[in-house]
Image (spheres, helix red, strand yellow):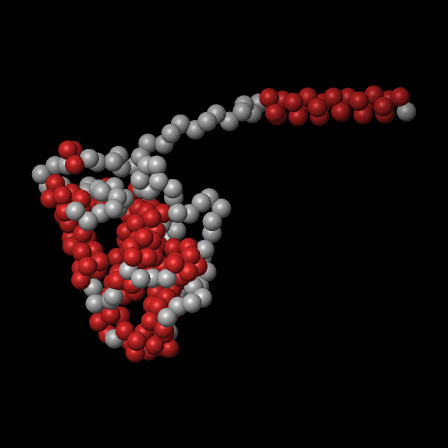
Length: 221
């Protein structure tokens, strides 16, 4: 019996020592150093002759200046200019009315959880006449409850195309009846273009301007 007690005591000491060694062998985590930006923010003064025309055009229309997606786009100025020209059509000259166009951009930004897209286009959607209730539902990752017929057609079209990579005959027919052929093409184009913008932002790890609150918090879906 005494031998068993000694054995148990020896095992307990060994386990305690092993446990102490385990915890002592793991030093407390040190704070991570601030991560270097993937693309340091350019300033207008830093732009090359090839970049400057695009930078000047961006500054006339962008709520984030040459930050956001334009910061990486400027690294490839020929692509950047052509993407800017496409966005110029899709933003200002599309056959879609601004209310529906901004709605499509917001849907895409929400699917990508794109902080910069939502930061830039939430106010624009509101200004274009999209209901605050629709914007709030979409931001909360819910299907908006009080959509007009054309808004519901846009929502279902963009969601199906983006998540299922297809559009059902029923959804297409409804969109065609309410919007027409040209608006369907422009709706598809603006959705795809803002997927590209969201990809650029995600790849470059671009955030909202310094001092501004990100639309989506860590616990948001």
